[in-house]
Length: 257
Image (cartoon, rainbow, N blue to C red; front, side, top):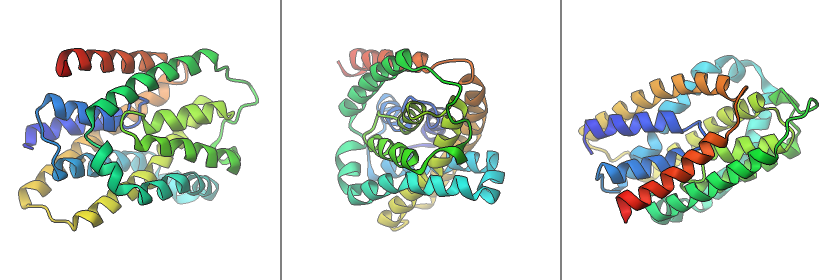
């Protein structure tokens, strides 16, 4: 992997991490297009640059992290299912799922169809919860269970959490913000576990590539998060569903077939 490829992947990560289109899936497909071999370092890079996107959340929501204990309690409860599954299945996930183009395409296509169907039947009600601290612990646990499905590349962690929150009676802005905040412990845990497993055995050039990816993902994610929060207040997720389907079909026909 060179620095140009690292910059491209970091921009892709920053754009796709918090949108319901699967950042992992996009990183895998982009790596394929750039002819980047799925080495252990590349897989580490794709996980570690998520820290840049995470930093964007921390900067934007620092006051929530410092002051709102009720929100933190719900984030921790929602994180538990993914934390357990990720820890137990870390090796098979990294060995067999990450980097698998076919699984990614199937997940993108299927997820796109589901996203469109769910949006067509979803109706926001006046009594739906508009603040994270008012979501019940039962519901945040269910959201966490849905998030754990996103260990499959192409599913999309943000899609799983936002859509499940909507159907559990949460308004769009609160659902999106909860998804953003839940990403912090989820991706920190994934990155930390990966770093421990890798024993920090990177060359100086590889560390510079990781730093480049970190900065690129932070800047891009910061911009995208602010845009997305405005977008979801007046738009549905149907365009993202259509995009996922078109991307999966075109990638298969043009790149693979």
